[in-house]
Length: 137
Ligand SMILES: [Zn+2]
Image 1 (cartoon, rainbow, N blue to C red):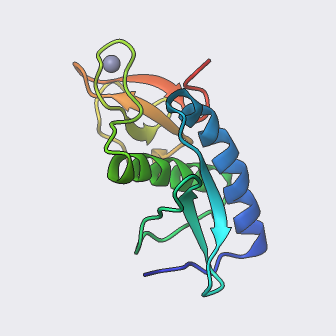
Image 2 (cartoon, rainbow, N blue to C red):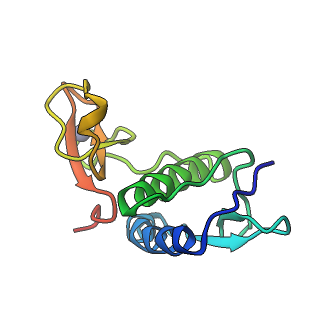
């Protein structure tokens, strides 16, 4: 298991990102949090059960990075421990994917184009549903 030794600044960024992702999670009544681990690292957990992903490194080099990390962890936690597809496209009833906000109509993306994360649906050529943290707006 990997308990990442995040710096205090990175942990703070991750906490902020978790607050944003939590707004999206509120829809399904799930709650995540960042907790310190015995090893001195951190874990993102489902707060009601304490479940966490083992071997899933945390990263938060900047605010955008922290959002990617918090959102992908939240999605995997819900999937793995609540056996639930989340989030779901309100239009197509399909599970959404994390992708770079403002990407074109196809799924190709130059690595230099990575932006803040958004929830994107694969129906048709794909469409962006919302920025991470803004699903319920
Ligand atoms: Zn859709």
